[in-house]
Image (tube, rainbow, N blue to C red):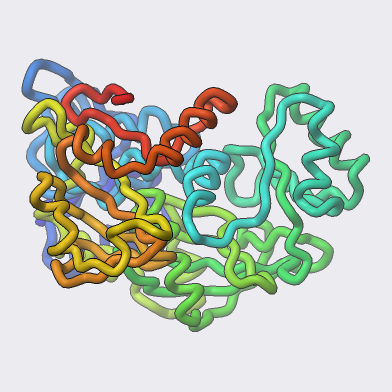
Length: 409
């Protein structure tokens, strides 16, 4: 395998370890400075130049995109994707995880724990927002802060209001988040590779510091996560579109609460803490997946106009409840079920004898007009009301024409 590591820090611990792990496994590897690329676009032939020369072929790339170069870095990763080169993390996944608000918006529609969070711009909305998340103390976060920078604890509502007003005056966007008291000064970092957690550590803040980041002086200890924490970490990474991720979780009385998902997690602290070869796990995963490049369904599903992807809900009282998939008539209606979502469980390519239950959600590809008829009228009316009241929010059951990308009403 010929691997490119996209990194502006070739001497950093993480980049060095990843390169060493690749060499040990007999792979050809080169560290490529992300900022030295030029992106060339022409009909039918996306291309990349590196240091003024046309880039040679790579089987895979591993992005290590820093926060300061997110826009250009994700553009480079996206170009590799258009060239059908496997990327350990997708450009969309990196963008999703880099923006704290966007990542929580995406996670919030799924059955996965997150601290109650609110985002406001009007000064009059600050105090009501603080009350909605449970009152002071509250955590205030910059949307694009990293390594604990831009994370503040406000002990009172008045101090929170003053901090938010100051940050907003400096054109900073902030989140107001519930303070999980039982997890004060500690959190869990789970390192996800593919569909498993390969290592985990608990980070504990020192002294009066409430942020547990290692960069803030936090100490670490290796931990074995139970099934709930493992499952939550993997699902959070997958929902955001990441195959290699550091998932930070709070240990709340209600179970794991996702704080943040990092698309370029550092290796030094967790490898030294756990004594595990995480870099090697990443290399083994990439080598096993290299033949499966990222596919954007919105781009590729252009076989025929009028076909697309949507999600069909099976409500209580539906005639499909209690039926096996093969008897549902969906296949005869030119509708293919790609995955079945049941609570927190996802069943890919469900078998024909799978029984449907109330509350199931079916991700389907098929003829849009036929799938439209499977969305109950009541649900459609509720969707249109949401569109009217909240035009900026994505809505459930949105159907898109795969060939045009336009909404179909």
